[in-house]
Length: 303
Image 1 (spheres, one colour):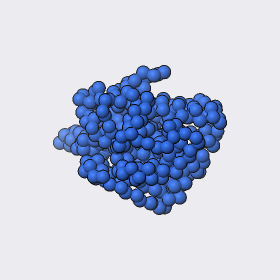
Image 2 (cartoon, helix red, strand yellow):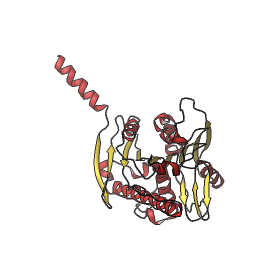
Image 3 (cartoon, helix red, strand yellow):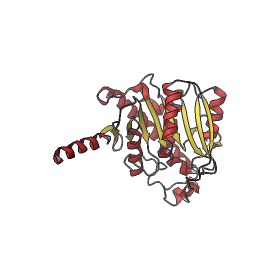
Image 4 (spheres, one colour):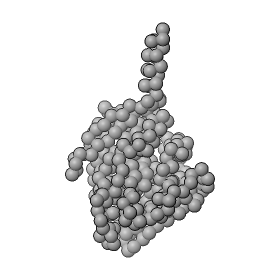
């Protein structure tokens, strides 16, 4: 009797843990992999394509924080696909314009790899039980930039997204401390972007909360993005964390409820909504690292 009870408990415990399977999805200088986490509970039909952060200098799809967050999303019914991408800033010692070009290349390389991962999912969607019309691009910091750039590149038919399936579009984009980088001048979407959910600290010194523009090049954070989206009537939700910096890139586990509400109303409900919320969170203390600039972190090799 005790043995049978133990077997039942083990079965129930196993059922509550999401399964994880790895796949090689593209060959670059080395092979890039992705992990597919199946829902730990009843599937809700949506797949979150998760992209880790780390300044294009460090990070991994299997960083403990990322793995834990991916499994947390499966508990909400999401299939989660966590990808690796090329780290274009790794081992580089550059500054000035050369440093800017290196960072630019790194951002576009990561977005190119993300597009290749989506193409892989499209080729294997039946065996992976993935609905390509219900993919949510999501990322933290550099991963958030990558998620935003994939949709921006899709809308403007930019070369780094050429691997995307024809006529494919994401169900939504979710960015924690992200921005859109462009070297074509002001922000312009030739097609309507996917509904976009943004989380950003108002004093972020690493990924700009507002914008940094130099000539035709520009980095546009949450504040600048929603101004442009609002002007064009594109649906968005933004959570502005007042007086917080780049630590907001780690807000994923604290904002699952907000993510679910966004999916329910903006994505599944297909409602054209605009939501702008300012948050003061005393339980989200700033860290010393989050108050530094990207330049300082690269110089100190803290990325």
